[in-house]
Image 1 (cartoon, rainbow, N blue to C red):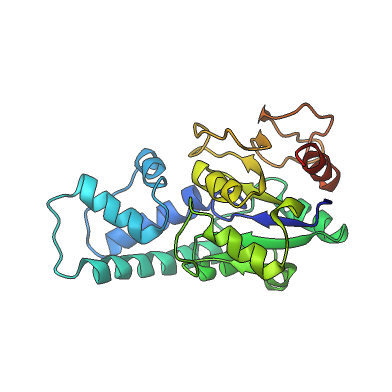
Image 2: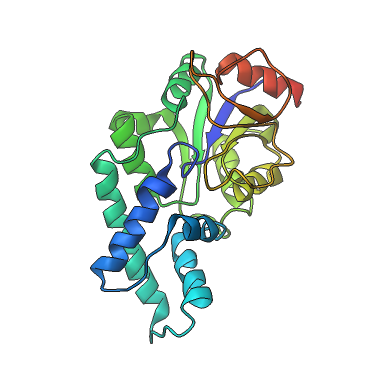
Length: 253
Protein backbone atom coordinates (compact mmCIF):
# COMPACT_ATOMS: atom_id res chain seq x y z
CA UNK A 1 0.00 0.00 0.00
CA UNK A 2 1.40 3.41 -0.96
CA UNK A 3 2.02 6.27 1.44
CA UNK A 4 -1.00 8.59 1.53
CA UNK A 5 -0.87 10.62 4.75
CA UNK A 6 1.35 12.00 7.51
CA UNK A 7 0.00 12.35 11.04
CA UNK A 8 1.83 14.60 13.50
CA UNK A 9 2.01 14.88 17.25
CA UNK A 10 2.46 18.50 18.41
CA UNK A 11 4.25 19.09 21.72
CA UNK A 12 7.92 18.19 21.38
CA UNK A 13 7.45 17.01 17.79
CA UNK A 14 6.49 20.13 15.84
CA UNK A 15 8.16 22.49 18.30
CA UNK A 16 9.94 22.42 21.66
CA UNK A 17 6.71 23.61 23.22
CA UNK A 18 7.29 21.73 26.46
CA UNK A 19 10.55 23.42 27.41
CA UNK A 20 10.03 26.84 25.85
CA UNK A 21 6.26 27.17 26.31
CA UNK A 22 4.42 24.90 28.72
CA UNK A 23 7.07 24.75 31.47
CA UNK A 24 7.50 28.52 31.42
CA UNK A 25 3.72 29.01 31.46
CA UNK A 26 3.19 26.61 34.37
CA UNK A 27 5.73 28.45 36.53
CA UNK A 28 4.30 31.86 35.62
CA UNK A 29 0.81 30.63 36.47
CA UNK A 30 1.97 29.29 39.84
CA UNK A 31 3.62 32.62 40.64
CA UNK A 32 0.57 34.64 39.57
CA UNK A 33 -1.62 32.54 41.87
CA UNK A 34 0.75 33.01 44.79
CA UNK A 35 1.78 29.36 44.88
CA UNK A 36 5.35 28.58 45.94
CA UNK A 37 5.66 25.83 43.34
CA UNK A 38 8.59 25.98 40.92
CA UNK A 39 9.10 23.23 38.36
CA UNK A 40 12.70 22.81 37.27
CA UNK A 41 13.62 21.56 33.82
CA UNK A 42 14.69 18.26 35.38
CA UNK A 43 11.44 17.85 37.33
CA UNK A 44 9.38 18.69 34.27
CA UNK A 45 11.13 15.91 32.39
CA UNK A 46 9.69 13.50 34.98
CA UNK A 47 6.25 15.11 34.94
CA UNK A 48 6.03 14.68 31.18
CA UNK A 49 5.60 10.96 31.77
CA UNK A 50 2.08 11.92 32.86
CA UNK A 51 -0.08 12.78 29.86
CA UNK A 52 -2.29 15.86 30.20
CA UNK A 53 -1.61 19.09 32.08
CA UNK A 54 -4.24 18.70 34.81
CA UNK A 55 -3.19 15.13 35.55
CA UNK A 56 0.41 16.36 35.64
CA UNK A 57 -0.46 18.90 38.36
CA UNK A 58 -2.29 16.25 40.41
CA UNK A 59 0.65 13.86 40.11
CA UNK A 60 3.00 16.62 41.29
CA UNK A 61 0.80 17.37 44.31
CA UNK A 62 0.51 13.72 45.27
CA UNK A 63 4.24 13.03 45.02
CA UNK A 64 5.88 16.33 45.95
CA UNK A 65 3.22 18.25 47.91
CA UNK A 66 1.32 15.55 49.85
CA UNK A 67 0.49 18.06 52.57
CA UNK A 68 -1.39 20.31 50.12
CA UNK A 69 -5.17 20.38 50.57
CA UNK A 70 -7.98 22.05 48.67
CA UNK A 71 -11.67 21.42 49.28
CA UNK A 72 -12.40 21.37 45.53
CA UNK A 73 -9.18 20.06 44.04
CA UNK A 74 -10.56 19.24 40.58
CA UNK A 75 -11.83 22.77 39.96
CA UNK A 76 -8.74 24.32 41.54
CA UNK A 77 -6.45 22.33 39.26
CA UNK A 78 -8.65 23.17 36.27
CA UNK A 79 -8.34 26.89 37.10
CA UNK A 80 -4.55 26.63 37.29
CA UNK A 81 -4.46 24.86 33.96
CA UNK A 82 -6.75 27.45 32.37
CA UNK A 83 -4.45 30.27 33.50
CA UNK A 84 -1.42 28.33 32.31
CA UNK A 85 -3.05 27.90 28.88
CA UNK A 86 -3.76 31.64 28.71
CA UNK A 87 -0.11 32.41 29.50
CA UNK A 88 1.10 29.77 27.03
CA UNK A 89 -1.00 31.39 24.31
CA UNK A 90 0.60 34.74 25.09
CA UNK A 91 4.09 33.25 24.86
CA UNK A 92 3.32 31.67 21.49
CA UNK A 93 1.85 34.94 20.23
CA UNK A 94 5.09 36.64 21.24
CA UNK A 95 7.06 34.19 19.06
CA UNK A 96 8.76 32.42 21.96
CA UNK A 97 8.39 28.95 20.44
CA UNK A 98 9.55 28.36 16.83
CA UNK A 99 8.99 25.16 14.91
CA UNK A 100 11.69 22.50 15.06
CA UNK A 101 14.23 22.07 12.29
CA UNK A 102 12.70 20.84 9.03
CA UNK A 103 9.04 20.93 10.09
CA UNK A 104 7.88 23.83 7.92
CA UNK A 105 9.82 22.54 4.92
CA UNK A 106 8.36 19.05 5.23
CA UNK A 107 4.81 20.39 5.46
CA UNK A 108 5.28 22.29 2.22
CA UNK A 109 6.93 19.37 0.43
CA UNK A 110 4.24 16.94 1.57
CA UNK A 111 1.47 19.23 0.38
CA UNK A 112 3.18 19.68 -2.99
CA UNK A 113 3.43 15.88 -3.31
CA UNK A 114 -0.27 15.43 -2.58
CA UNK A 115 0.15 13.76 0.80
CA UNK A 116 -2.67 14.31 3.26
CA UNK A 117 -1.83 15.88 6.63
CA UNK A 118 -3.38 15.47 10.07
CA UNK A 119 -2.63 16.12 13.74
CA UNK A 120 -3.07 13.69 16.64
CA UNK A 121 -2.27 15.22 20.02
CA UNK A 122 -3.46 15.36 23.59
CA UNK A 123 -2.79 19.09 23.93
CA UNK A 124 -5.81 21.39 23.69
CA UNK A 125 -7.22 22.53 20.33
CA UNK A 126 -6.45 26.11 21.38
CA UNK A 127 -2.77 25.26 21.85
CA UNK A 128 -2.62 23.69 18.40
CA UNK A 129 -4.34 26.65 16.76
CA UNK A 130 -2.09 29.27 18.32
CA UNK A 131 1.12 27.36 17.51
CA UNK A 132 0.21 26.80 13.85
CA UNK A 133 -1.16 30.31 13.36
CA UNK A 134 1.90 32.00 14.84
CA UNK A 135 4.53 29.87 13.09
CA UNK A 136 2.98 29.11 9.70
CA UNK A 137 0.10 31.57 9.45
CA UNK A 138 -3.59 31.09 10.24
CA UNK A 139 -4.29 29.80 6.75
CA UNK A 140 -2.03 26.82 7.52
CA UNK A 141 -4.69 25.41 9.85
CA UNK A 142 -6.48 24.45 6.65
CA UNK A 143 -3.56 22.26 5.60
CA UNK A 144 -4.63 19.61 8.11
CA UNK A 145 -7.56 17.46 7.09
CA UNK A 146 -8.17 16.46 10.70
CA UNK A 147 -6.92 18.07 13.90
CA UNK A 148 -7.43 15.52 16.64
CA UNK A 149 -6.67 17.40 19.85
CA UNK A 150 -7.58 17.57 23.52
CA UNK A 151 -9.94 15.25 25.34
CA UNK A 152 -12.18 14.37 22.39
CA UNK A 153 -11.39 10.70 23.00
CA UNK A 154 -11.92 8.67 26.21
CA UNK A 155 -8.25 7.92 26.87
CA UNK A 156 -5.15 10.03 26.28
CA UNK A 157 -1.81 8.74 25.00
CA UNK A 158 -0.30 6.14 25.45
CA UNK A 159 -3.76 4.84 24.54
CA UNK A 160 -4.28 4.72 20.78
CA UNK A 161 -7.68 6.46 20.88
CA UNK A 162 -6.60 9.74 19.28
CA UNK A 163 -4.96 7.93 16.37
CA UNK A 164 -8.01 5.74 15.82
CA UNK A 165 -10.11 8.91 15.82
CA UNK A 166 -7.94 10.57 13.17
CA UNK A 167 -7.75 7.48 10.97
CA UNK A 168 -11.52 7.06 11.16
CA UNK A 169 -12.16 10.70 10.24
CA UNK A 170 -9.77 10.42 7.28
CA UNK A 171 -11.18 7.02 6.27
CA UNK A 172 -7.65 5.66 5.97
CA UNK A 173 -5.96 2.40 6.85
CA UNK A 174 -3.00 2.73 9.21
CA UNK A 175 -0.81 0.97 6.62
CA UNK A 176 -1.04 4.00 4.32
CA UNK A 177 0.22 6.51 6.90
CA UNK A 178 3.30 7.54 8.87
CA UNK A 179 3.05 9.02 12.36
CA UNK A 180 5.56 11.51 13.78
CA UNK A 181 6.22 11.39 17.52
CA UNK A 182 8.88 12.38 20.04
CA UNK A 183 8.13 10.30 23.14
CA UNK A 184 7.66 6.73 24.35
CA UNK A 185 4.00 7.36 25.19
CA UNK A 186 3.45 8.80 21.73
CA UNK A 187 5.16 5.84 20.08
CA UNK A 188 3.04 3.38 22.06
CA UNK A 189 -0.12 5.25 21.04
CA UNK A 190 0.82 5.32 17.37
CA UNK A 191 2.07 1.75 17.08
CA UNK A 192 -0.94 0.46 19.02
CA UNK A 193 -2.97 1.91 16.16
CA UNK A 194 -0.66 -0.04 13.78
CA UNK A 195 0.99 3.12 12.48
CA UNK A 196 4.54 3.16 11.18
CA UNK A 197 6.25 5.79 13.32
CA UNK A 198 9.20 8.15 12.89
CA UNK A 199 10.68 9.56 16.10
CA UNK A 200 12.44 12.91 16.51
CA UNK A 201 13.83 13.00 20.04
CA UNK A 202 14.30 16.07 22.22
CA UNK A 203 16.06 16.73 25.51
CA UNK A 204 13.20 15.25 27.54
CA UNK A 205 12.80 12.10 25.46
CA UNK A 206 16.31 11.19 24.33
CA UNK A 207 16.54 8.44 26.97
CA UNK A 208 13.12 6.94 26.18
CA UNK A 209 12.71 3.45 24.75
CA UNK A 210 11.65 3.44 21.09
CA UNK A 211 11.88 -0.23 20.20
CA UNK A 212 9.11 -0.23 17.61
CA UNK A 213 10.00 2.98 15.77
CA UNK A 214 11.00 2.86 12.10
CA UNK A 215 13.78 5.34 12.76
CA UNK A 216 14.98 7.61 15.58
CA UNK A 217 16.39 11.01 14.57
CA UNK A 218 17.46 14.13 16.43
CA UNK A 219 15.34 16.27 14.09
CA UNK A 220 13.97 16.27 10.54
CA UNK A 221 17.09 17.98 9.19
CA UNK A 222 17.55 20.46 6.38
CA UNK A 223 19.62 20.46 3.23
CA UNK A 224 23.11 21.27 4.47
CA UNK A 225 22.10 20.56 8.08
CA UNK A 226 21.74 16.76 8.25
CA UNK A 227 19.84 14.84 10.89
CA UNK A 228 21.66 12.50 13.27
CA UNK A 229 20.23 8.98 13.31
CA UNK A 230 20.17 7.11 16.61
CA UNK A 231 18.56 3.97 15.20
CA UNK A 232 17.22 2.88 11.85
CA UNK A 233 18.22 1.48 8.47
CA UNK A 234 21.14 3.08 6.68
CA UNK A 235 20.14 5.68 4.09
CA UNK A 236 21.79 8.14 1.73
CA UNK A 237 19.23 10.76 2.76
CA UNK A 238 20.46 13.45 5.12
CA UNK A 239 17.13 15.12 5.85
CA UNK A 240 13.53 13.95 5.95
CA UNK A 241 11.76 14.65 2.68
CA UNK A 242 8.93 12.92 0.83
CA UNK A 243 11.28 10.56 -1.02
CA UNK A 244 12.83 9.43 2.27
CA UNK A 245 9.41 8.89 3.84
CA UNK A 246 8.33 6.77 0.88
CA UNK A 247 11.57 4.79 1.22
CA UNK A 248 10.90 4.19 4.93
CA UNK A 249 7.27 3.33 4.31
CA UNK A 250 8.15 0.78 1.63
CA UNK A 251 10.83 -0.86 3.82
CA UNK A 252 8.41 -1.31 6.70
CA UNK A 253 5.39 -2.41 4.71
